[in-house]
Image (cartoon, rainbow, N blue to C red; front, side):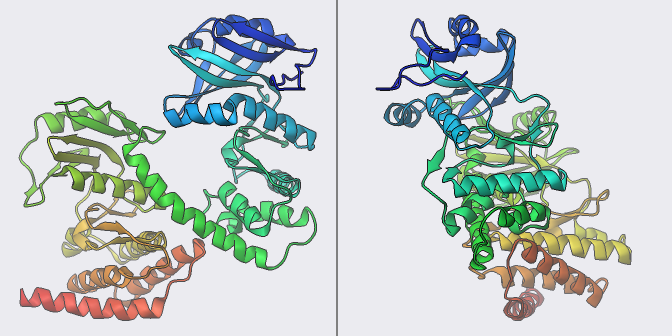
Length: 510
């Protein structure tokens, strides 16, 4: 029992019902029609108090879960705060109705999809918001790559079938693919679907790279081996060039995703909570994944800062028991805040950002404090044995490798700006003022970063000697290869040695 939109020559099916409730309207399957009409009598904001739980709250949509006429359902309500959202609904049709049409088309193609039960427009104050209701798949969870190989093979075969039948969902990632208790996959969230005939190699590669984007190597990552094997075996043999296309698609996705993720730093989204702008008042940007208990500490630091541990022309630095605050001009503080997001995306070890505060052309960036002295102090005091030094070198090599493989640089890499976590042994980059972004293929600046590290290593007495250098280089190369890249190591080595000598000579002369 599925509803159909009101289109010319496409009247509602006999088992569907048209609902009009004030300004709200909907097409619903008969079993839920009466209950939906009662629900539409209320604004969307009140639905969470009518037996439905808010599962997700995003800048694009709100997702609720609960019973409707005794049937377990999910309700997706699209936000229409922006003019672009309202214009898109007018020009292309309401997003809820589009999703129902795509779900029905996928079902007609023999693809497993969640069952649509209703779609329409609901009231939310003076706005109308498009919504879609689907039946909940019982005992299901989103797909993840740690699932059994048999599940991965089913998912790979499903993706191959979709691409062969011309369906390319623009937002198909593991979170939009449910796996039930029998290991069967189910498609959902098909709002953005392209129907374009059998997909080309490039489009297949782009779709797989997006689906596997959480893995360093995309579809070629070791964790996706079963999925890719099933995909390749699910139809006629694909050309050998397909593997190269997968590599290029993974590079393209990462190159576009890094700056996009950086823009989340100052945008209200799942990672950032942005306080409403009010003239004459400070504005706060909160990182949602940071410990909530630290917000009050950041507010206190901004209201009554103690004596700074460091101050200079760029600003001041405060170090408390749990947070570190850094004061800069508003523009510089936003760059510093965005750099922390870049490193989060690249999975480079750095203190978790907590808050950014801007007021009267000044900014304050607060991060979680790593409870230890800088690596330079630990080495100078001889607090690390050979095993700890090698572990630190491997951690640092992995971090710098991931930094460079994402097109990032940190021209202020020195032992004073590296802090080792005493519990895990990982080395964190704690001063991000020198972080900048370049195109991924552009190798400029990598040798300078490595040279600065090499100079600091030599100035500290080369702890561990050649073994430390080899451990760093192996981890650096491994990080690149995991991300499907091969750095120009010989050229970087020459530049690093030259830069290290230049840095040492300048400091001796100073």
